[in-house]
Length: 215
Image (cartoon, rainbow, N blue to C red; front, side, top):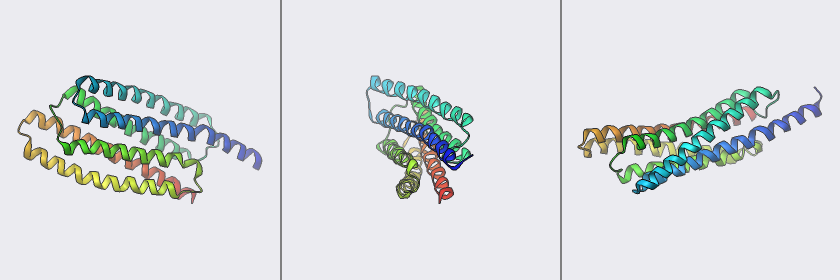
């Protein structure tokens, strides 16, 4: 394959994958915003609206991920390594699945209320998802990797903050919640939130791996 042909194929790969990554990241951000709204509203009708929107976004996310994997099967030369494309899309899909799982648990378990401390967590997930999206948008500019690194470092800081918040919430829950059924419901939802932030950090780890390979 000639040099000009190689770069033409590489350019085609750029046009295929980077827009789909951006679409997948934007979809996750929308789901995170709806999850945050779900935690702060008391209106049952609005709760159902946000849950339905997250469900629809989860379906859209599955379709975007399938398109990425199908394109990966058909593309000979990719802009980043094939396993990194798979890992990046899969980790973003997992964030979305966890957000959906949290909203579904709220729908099924119908917890009576959330303490203000618990409601802080989804807002931090929104920030983490927006930082993830910011980094994804810079992937096509890999030679200017500082913005990606900065976003990933911010996600790492958020995860540490959320880890401390998680332990505080669990401690407070066992201290204050006297209804055993409510305690079980809330504990599972809190653990789901923690897993979501952990998975956002997984996306950041994949991005850092890509940067190391391109250095």
